[in-house]
Length: 269
Image 1 (cartoon, rainbow, N blue to C red):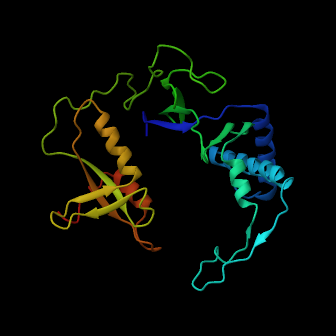
Image 2 (image 1 turned 135 degrees about the horizontal axis):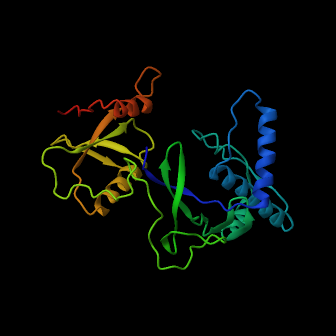
Image 3 (image 1 turned 90 degrees about the vertical axis):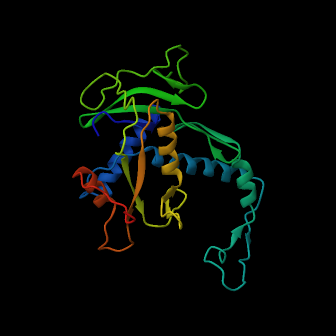
């Protein structure tokens, strides 16, 4: 992982967040004394801000409507959710939360517009040793910038470069990659073939050519990165079967094979 670049959501530090984190750690130690300390991440902060926003919406709706429950659907072959009674003020809650803002929330300015959480700034980090170094920021409005203002907006500078990056091999020189496409060798990318959550990754084979067809968010991001490079990188996806069984190989096995330099082979070879 040395020299790898990655992104993580940026959360502005605040007194409210510091106090909440102290309470969180204290309560966690009380309830789980035998477990290692678990730190809050951005998903936990978003969940907390979401519940806070929902509570505020309930208070607003509660002053204008008397809560009533609709009778459950009694048709046959329904799911458990269909059999639950639903609140008649549910639509009012949704309307009140379509465009709203919690400022400030624990995670910063928590804004929902047209029912969607608005993008947060991202930190661009460089993995060094056992830690990471922030080398830049990204926002939807301004793109990449070296620094970020305290209010979460990128600094207005002409410098669109990142900070100093320590690349693999402890070098500060940006890797050039292959100037001329290599012949024969390809970058072999192991992809989990397990079914389910096909929006993230789905592995199929062409019935005629038996070529591997990989789709979903993960492969799409990978392909876009490859296209953005200034040099050619031939690659191929190699399926790695993962069955839903305690004795089957799993993600750890896939990572171990990469670490031990075991060559993954396509079953069609």
